[in-house]
Image 1 (cartoon, rainbow, N blue to C red):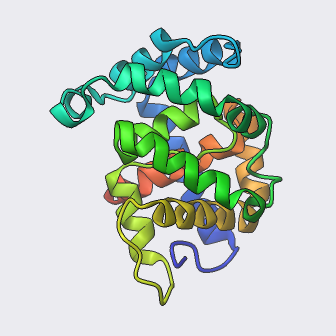
Image 2 (spheres, rainbow, N blue to C red; image 1 turned 180 degrees about the vertical axis):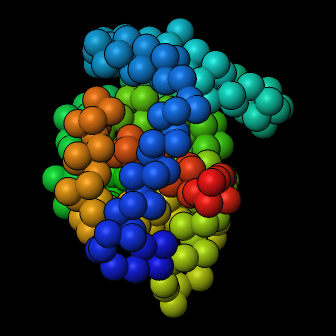
Length: 215
């Protein structure tokens, strides 16, 4: 990852500025409300599909994508998938990405990603995994995925939006959190968010609105 080459004041300033600008221009009510409601959902007994739908359509703006023929019937399929995978999902729900050695979870990450992406596509699939396990699965979209992919130093040829691509993205996010843990934790406390969400603010802003940092 070459986004932030070294842990220094300049790099920390960029993270702080991106998060500050995000907080000034974005209303997190829908995100916070859906996460709060779904956190109380015991998926071993029932799946709160109403909140998943709201999260994807209202907050995630995935209506146009999920309206495609290839994703027809996604709601029943996702509910059945969660019913099958609730043990692995509950384990990851209580796992803190910041503290975890994600290499121990590589198999589960890739298998869950493939299953959810097959039903919902790579972006909505990750959004759903994030809703279920908000402290473990980092969010991405096409712009974030491409930016991180382009900066990734690797000799492997990895297919875009594959399970390997998402796992590589998770390792990149982990590297940012490890290198800039102090500033990320400080911002998490300031904005009352978990550390993973703070990195998402930064990743979204630096990939979608980089020129704004000059003003």
